[in-house]
Image 1 (tube, helix red, strand yellow):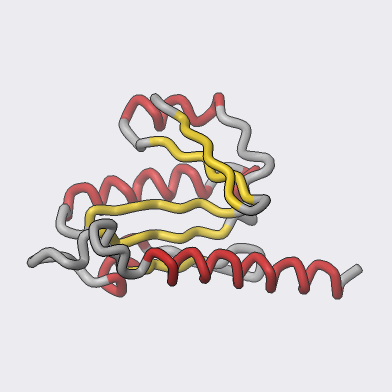
Image 2 (tube, rainbow, N blue to C red):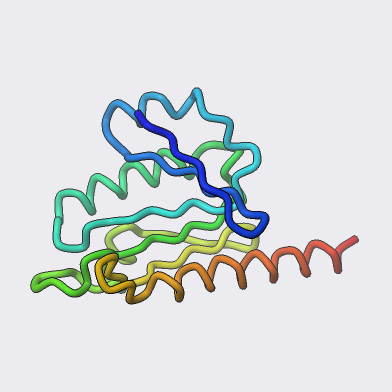
Length: 137
């Protein structure tokens, strides 16, 4: 599988394509510094959505990811037959708690709709987490 890294304003983004082979490689990835998981789902492909649920379930069980926030981009919202972000959230059965927040953001990678909203959600969520951690010290 291919792991790509990009840096932007003190944030390192690591990305890889989820395939059956890459799922088997997760044990080789160091997740200890991961603060947020971003999944991009094709909201027109029902089979892929169900497979993504399985992948998310596996990843959310890793102890190193127990506090990682989860952002899911429900991509291709501009296409006919796309499932809504709310519908995808129900299918994925994402559950947040005090340590982990989860959000499904409708998006279109072609037009850019929803992308900044999702990234804002990440940064605001992480800022709130930092403030909460500082107030508990």
